Amino acid sequence: MKEKNNNIEFLEHTADILFRAKGKTFEEALETAALAMFQTIARGVKKEKQVEFEEKAETLEELVCFALSRALTESEINEIFFAEMNVKEFSEEKGEFRIKAVCTGGEGKQNLVVKAVTFHQMKIERKEKETTIQVLLDV
Image (cartoon, rainbow, N blue to C red; front, side, top):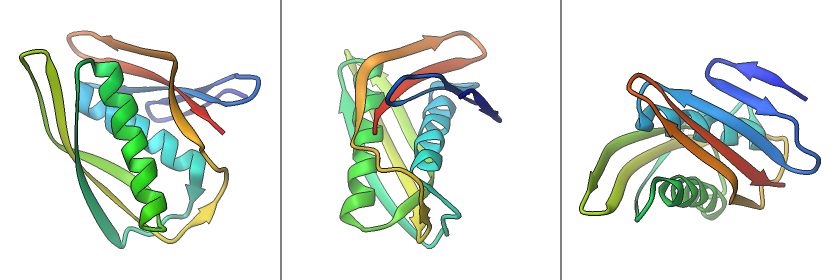
């Protein structure tokens, strides 16, 4: 099944959910990747509660995996579905990448259970005016 929605492209995969998310910057692409994951999990999510978190990693691939995994975990811990992620800060220095992000969500209708964000088939392509992040979700 191929479906396009703004800067999200869902790709065919035999068992799991594979998508590409685009943005003008890495931060925008990560927010779009989070949106793709959140839309996979639930629909009609109310924006009632915010959860903040920070993540750091040695590579951008790790940062994407850690940030999306953290959002998934925070959703489960707080027993809410998320509708969006906003990256408040992003930095890369001395071989370390860091973000501060806020996820907003609340009640919604569940579509699928995402078990994990994986490194399998993850790709990040950064160009001057666009970043693309490809992610495989284990469902």
